[in-house]
Amino acid sequence: MNKRLANESYEFLTGIFTHSFDIQFVLGIVGLAFNIPHFIISIQKAMRVSSTDILIIGIAICDLTVTAGVVWERTFYWLVKTNHCINEFYYFNQLALWIQTILTDNAVWISFWLPIYLVLIRLLLLKLCIKSTFLCKPSVGYLLFLMTILISLIVTFKGNLDKYLAVQPTSPWVPSSDCPGFPANYSEDFFVVLTRTDNDTNPNSFYITFLAVSQIIVSVIYPLLALILFIEIRNSARRVMDNNLSESLDRTRSSKMIFYLTVSYIVSSVPRGVIWVFHVFVQSVSVESFLEMFLGYGTIITSAFFCLNATLQCVICFVLSSRYRETARSLLRMKQLSSTNILIIGIAICDLTASSAIIWERTFDWMVRRNSCKNGSSYSNQLAYWIITAMNENAVWISFWLAIYLVLIRLLILKSCIDLTFLSKSSVGYLLFLATLLFSFLFFMNLNLRRQLVEINGFLWRPGPECIGFPEGYSEKKYYLQVNDGGHFFAYIPMYTFFVATSQTVVSIIYPFLALLLYVEIRISAVRITDINHSESLDRRNSYQSNDYELYGVLYNLKCTS
Image (cartoon, rainbow, N blue to C red; front, side, top):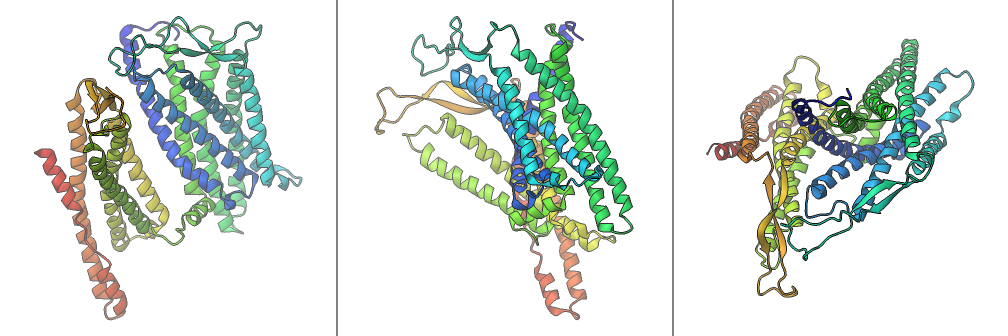
């Protein structure tokens, strides 16, 4: 395991493991997107009534910190480290990375201990014979959360006490020869984080040992406590089934939530504990060995698992906690909305995004690109144009599919022989909208990870002669969006175009067919009840209005095949 691998094996495994960075980045963005509303819902007054609620808020804060740190780190690598015209070892860049690493490590450590407190409190309330209701007070949750933060900060302070940012005078940073705008012989200081070695004790060794032991304890204690709590709640649910069915169902749902959260935490915590054990007991690692790859890429993979776990927690809380859903509905003022109402709101959001993007694009062309005194190809302008284009493409694609879900739900409720009224619940609409948003995001992210803003070598933007306020000889860099796919630009674009064209063609076929069936069904039902309820018949006749969603797909398909 610690022996040097053959070149072919090493290159093959490296080619596989390098994708873990992209997976980590995508899961970090998804986790951040899910945890922002999760945190907002969790801090509402209705969700702050017990100590366990406060601990859930603490976990949400930690998950937000970690996912934001992952997104920032990968964005920093993408925008700074891959740009040979920017000094990644600049003092503030290294200081920001150092702070981000400390915050992420602390948040991960705290987030694994808070669920132990949460499960332990619920277990003590169920099992103790003495009165222990004081454990439910929110003050107990605040105390445990602040105490864990304090311990984590003390250990982190001790582990980073002998670290400092130092200049490397023998190797200053020098911009590449193709970077314009730098004077001759320009250089900058090269900073790195170093550890003092003049002390007898090694604080870094203590810090690694502490994290490893702590992670192993979490990996062992949490599943054990969660299993005991799961069994206890299931038994109590069976005991009260005959007397109080609703209470039994609530306890069953609670046991399911604990089970799913336990599984996700085991997947997230156990691999991390194994990696920390290797860090403690393995003194030296051979270069290009499997162990080196396991420790290096394993950290990225466990970070991706953590982001996935942070996302799953939000979904599990929404699906299994009725109080959580009620709080979300009251926060969004959506108590009486059905799934079709949610889908209509989703379509409205997509239409608003697409129309805003069109207005922004035309305004940008009018005010910037046609203005000889503004650099339309500057980095910030090209980045904004890239983001707006990606949002517009996502919004258009999502809006067409939401319309299909809307028609399909109404058709299933009308035509199905079995009871499908659960499809009208607002949670179904949220689930379909979020699932479509996630799928679209993952696909477009896969495309855009192959793109990068590249400087146009040999071409500089210069203001026109009529422009005032610029010094003589003033110039700026120009950038353009390039697809980086190993030199095979046209190997990827047709696949992307084919996917979008196929998707739109499917929409163009399925939507009119489903819409026609729904139209006929509503007309028939309107005729059936004409004599019984005339006003209801009129409502059904006017309730359906066909949309020309097929037009866009046909036009896009013609564009693709031409």
